[in-house]
Length: 136
Image (cartoon, rainbow, N blue to C red; front, side, top):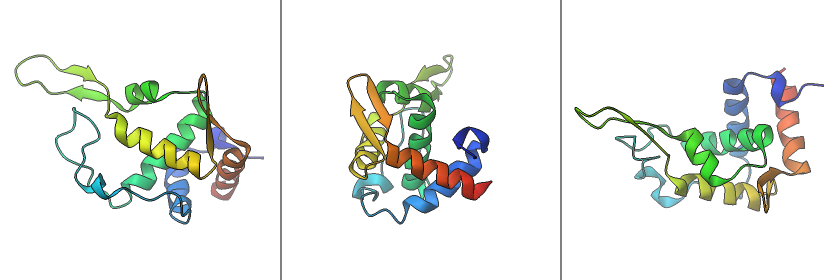
């Protein structure tokens, strides 16, 4: 049986993002077209399906690395900030997009919050494994 570990992440995230569009609880907020993903970015995301791609990526990260918190995910999605003539500096990603995405995934029943962080539920694990099986 194929699992998330057996499928390349880029194919997995793209396929899961397409499947998440059918889930009614996951909808991009109104402000998403204007918000940057962090201080290291100069513009807001240009992809139309960015919200679903980010939700799929977060779902995969919680599956693989769980339990994981927002602070750790901010570190993983962060990047290098160009500070002009000064050396670049590593900065964390913005927390709002990550937090709202996780809240929507939790509302859909794919993840749950524990004291140690966010974990994947049985429904979320089944959803991801079925997607991995479809890709393989």
